[in-house]
Every structure is written in C-alpha cells, then in structure tokens.
Length: 315
Image (cartoon, rainbow, N blue to C red):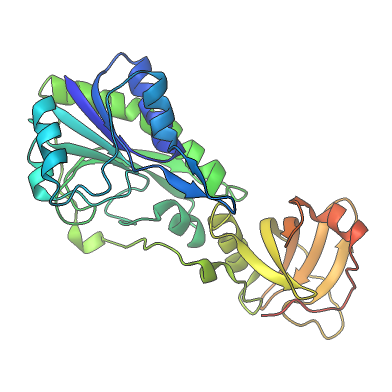
C-alpha cells in the first residue's frame, strides 16, 4: 500500500521512523518549509525532513497546499493509496483530501471527540485529567471531526508534563497506527462516527497564557505549569525578571504561617525547593529558570539568589 506521509515536529518524525522500520511503502513525505529559528535566525529543517533525507525519501515542502496546483499535480502523480497525517500544521482542502484511494488518516493526541484542536495534550493536563489517549481517524474538512478507526488509552500521572505525556501518547500511537494500516490494506477497517454531543475543544495557547495567577489553587497552578512546560512555559516574576516554572508539586501539608498571601514565599525546603502560598493550598516549586540564566533545580536557585521568606511573587 503506497503511503504519503504529512508531518513536521519531532513526534511526527518518530511515527515516520516507525513506518520506515515496519517496511511500509512510503512514496513521499510532505513537511513544512525550512524556518529561521532563534536570535541568529538560523535556517533549520523540520524533524520530519531530517528523517526523510536520511531515508532518501521523496520530499515536498509547499508553503501552502491550498489552491496549489503544482503540489496537487505532484500528489496525483504519486497515486497514493493512503495519506497519513501527524502534526503537519496546515489545513488540507477537499481537493487534496480526495486524491488518495483510501483518503487521509490523522493521528490525534486525545480520545476524540474530546479535545479537538491544536493543543489536546496541553488541555488534558490543564484540566487535571487522569486519562487521555490517541485516536486515528479519517480526515474530513471539519476540524478533527472524521470517523474514528481506532483509539488507545493512556494514563496520566500526577508528575506528567507535556514532554513526558507526549512520549507516552506517541509510544501508544505507533503500534496502533501499524494495526490500522493493516486493517485498511485488508479492508477490515471500521470507521465509527464521533458523537457530536460529546465534543470539547483544545484551542492553541498564546504566549501570555503562561503567566501565573497565584490566587488560583495550587492544583490549578501545578496543572498549568506541567501543561505549558514545552511552550509557552508558565512564568512569574522575581525581582523584576521573568521566572519560568518547569516543575512543581502540590504540597500535601498545610503550613500555618502568619498573614499568608497568594504568591508569598512561605518556606525554603532544604534539598527540595521553594514553597509558595496560593489561593488554596501551597505549591512547591522544583525546577525554574530566571531570565538570562540556565534552567535549574529550585533548591540550587536559592543558593545563588536572594530569596526571602515572606516576599510575594506578583499576580
């Protein structure tokens, strides 16, 4: 079965590697154009492009696929039986979706119809879910609305963040995808329509989404920190500088301190980190990064910085 793969970031690259290792017939790879990154604006390849080049696979990088007759003609010339999409990052129009014999299937990091949209992993963490998963569904023009071929559940632990949960989800996704490809090839696939009454959305985040409001509960703040660990990263301010927060835990004990206010540093716990009061409960900061400095353990941060008991981090 001839497959064209659409994808861009590292998780998609891992899926492409799985397909190559499984000896699937990859007739072409489509990824986003090379982009300038960082202060030096160095041009870098996508993770998917790196895998495609290493495997000597035909590669296309259209700036847009909408109304792109050249790209459409290329895909038609390949005559794919199926196209597989994993975090490609662009909307595919109907004239493209109609080309493959078996259409397009997409790998989505949630148990659809829950968390349709660009940020399903972040929203599952932000909402404090105990379980999420991966869905493989047939692409249609509406956002993540196509019928589902298969799903796998993934447990979320209290210390999972975006990075660790992503790894769990895509580890479950790869064998599931291989099974779905076999089912399509052997005409055994069964697509189940999504229940529109159960739909929830997972919209993307803005840079300002990471700013911490210490008036929220410790649990809510902890969930925001782990949900946004990759981007845009939760943050507060320390002595006028942005302080990124990467890891935390909800402190199990209730420390009775005088005039405890949300955002107040109420304890420096040796060999652990910085304990901060919230609107409900206390939060232990474990890993952070001050603007212009490297990421470090909070227990090491207090050694070289003037962290005072009683001072308040701004809301």
